[in-house]
Image (cartoon, rainbow, N blue to C red):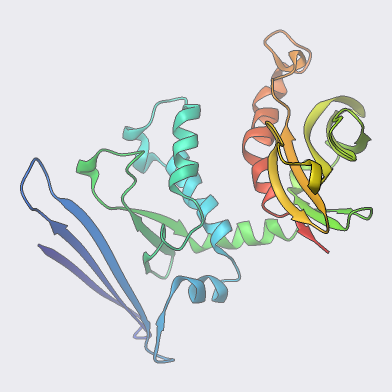
Length: 271
C-alpha cells in the first residue's frame, strides 16, 4: 500500500513523499518512507547535504535539534515519562545519531524541515514512521549560537576543542599527573564563583606502543605515535547532592557531563 503526498511551494519546490506499508502476514506490517525534494528553479534534486549547506548548518546540529524535539515537544509526550527518564534520553541519542541513514527521508516547507524515521526504541511499532519537524528559525538560532562557541587550543599537542558558550567562566584546564599510564592529562575542572569544585572530564595523552589497554577511557585518536583518550568524572560529587552547597546546580552539571562533554569530544581536531 502506498500513500503519496505531493506539495508545491511558491512554484519553486516540488515535494513528493511516499509512505509505504508492506504487509506479509502476522500481527502487523512494516512501514517505510521515501521523499523527493526538487528545486524547480535550478532544476536540481535536493539531497539533505545540499539543503543543510544552503541553510548554513550541518547534520550534527540538526540531529541535536531533532533530539530536543523528541525530548521536549508535546507532540511526543504520550511516549515518554515526566520527568523524562535517563533511559529515554539515551535512546533518543541512539536514534538520532547524525548519519545519513537516519535522515534519508525528509521534506521541506517554508517554515521547517520534516525528518521521517521509525523510532523503534522510542515508540511502539503502531506509531509507524514519524515525522519530526524542526523549524528554520530554530536552525538559524542554533547556527548563530554555534558561532559563539569557545575554542580551546592545546599548543603542546596541537589539538583544539569547541566548548559551548554556556561554559564561559565555568571551567579551567589544569595539567594532571593522576593517570600513571599517561604522559600527561589535561583536566577540565568545574568552577563556581571563582572556586574550583571538581573534575568535569579529562584528556590523557599516552604513548601508542604502551596503550594497548586503555581501560575505562574512551579513545579519541591515534596521532604521531600518541594515543589520545578521554574520560568524564565517574560520580556526582557530594557538593551537588541533596543538601549540598551546590544542590541547585545538579541538573546543570549533569547536563554538562552527560550531554555536552560527548558533543565536545566530537569537535576534537588536530591543527
